[in-house]
Length: 414
Image (cartoon, rainbow, N blue to C red):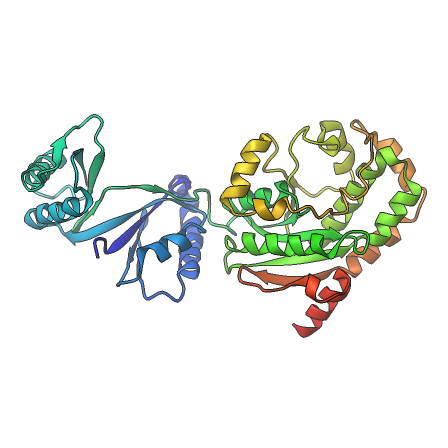
């Protein structure tokens, strides 16, 4: 095996001062959970994690590390002793494996052990000269090399690598507390959930389903999206709360002017989500809104909709362009699911001319036309919850029931 370790680096965690240990402990736990079951040796340092592969496939370890927030970058490395002769020979072996056609190179040395008898520049010159003499394809270019051989010299060991691979970044999921993601089934909300997790927020998800007004496939799409996001969660699992929204949905259609339908619908969703968040110990709501993207996402609409709750609302996509959102959606493997043409309750009866600057007073007037408070409380009480893991095989469409019936049966089984 060419490489025998993976060197993991931290990003913004190193800026956390006196709170750094809290963040590091969370990251160590997250790495251990994601690598669980593999016969690895994991060494935790204050600024690095060293993973000894023990004949494990590096590709499998790297795939799991891609789902760990809080890691800045990592490298496949060869670990050897800090004896200069051993370092030089190890460098030759590594470069002979990597370079089999004409290429330019340079050597960069970081010497953490200042008691070492040679300076960084002296080590670089000796190793570069030895490698050059033992590989016919190499030539030196210190300004624009095609290959860089990096040496990190520690007190007892040296780590050699040629590539630094960018990781997820951010903070370890869970370190910032827990939030409730309002998951619609479209492109935006899963991306918002991913970005929140990337910044350290553990998530639970809430979906407002209106079967049979909406299809069972719409609810299944949400389950499948949660499966995708669960790969980034601490234990590869996320709680999903299915809110039966049909009765409220019908009341809105019967009592609210079409232009205000989406505004009132969103206000009801915020009321329900806020109550569920408190029950589930979530500190905030999260959604996929982006300023101005649709009628309900103008600043005037947001102000009118937000006025029903005092709970903080995170909008990770607030300033994102749609193409940027789509790019991330594809990156986290949610895009193909999100564009499946199954309508949710926000789109099935989309008004032709929704209000883009709705007034709070007018929203309150329309809400006074029906007993929404009772309907909200019933929706909260009848919400069914289930834990979705990344390898879940839950298929709602095969069960032939309405979502609330399916979830109730699954809850009994649990």
